[in-house]
Length: 212
Image (tube, rainbow, N blue to C red; front, side, top):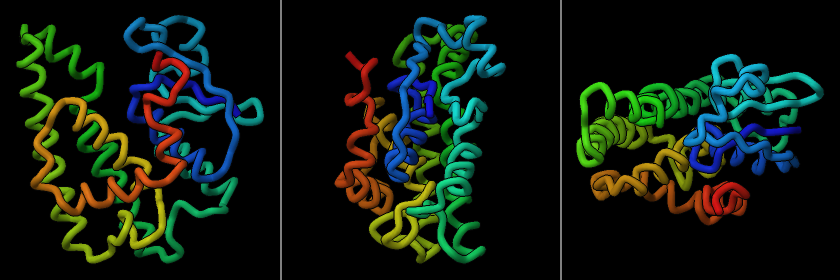
């Protein structure tokens, strides 16, 4: 397998965690977002959207991190990253989508670049934008997790799932932008438990070959 990745990409971080959880070896193919390598013709031939990550397996290319994690679950079902029951799978997918579809798109690199340029914001102005949407997103997620009564050590009881694969990168970003995280004790407890696991530790940005 090859994973087209960038060390600070949240979506690529998700995939690194999922691959590690599955015990699947992969060859990292670094695509630098700050250098706009994702816009080069060679990479666009791999991923026409010009986004990371992309996964190459058996000569075929897979895109979109949530879809790729589902692909791994179907092709390498052990250890599972989704619960056994349909109800619980729906819950886990909902948590993953709250993060990947509701929170992350508002504060990824291309959004921040656009906001900064279009509204002529300085770095602090961009940070204000970022922290606002993080606070709104995490507030809703905290309530959802707490009210579900399905969380335990991790987002779903004591089983690592795709929800945790999405949660941890988002919290890394929140910490990087110095967001106030005390209002989210459930989320932070889950984050702390995940970061005790090698699959998460080894996937973190500072451990990646392009982090130097």
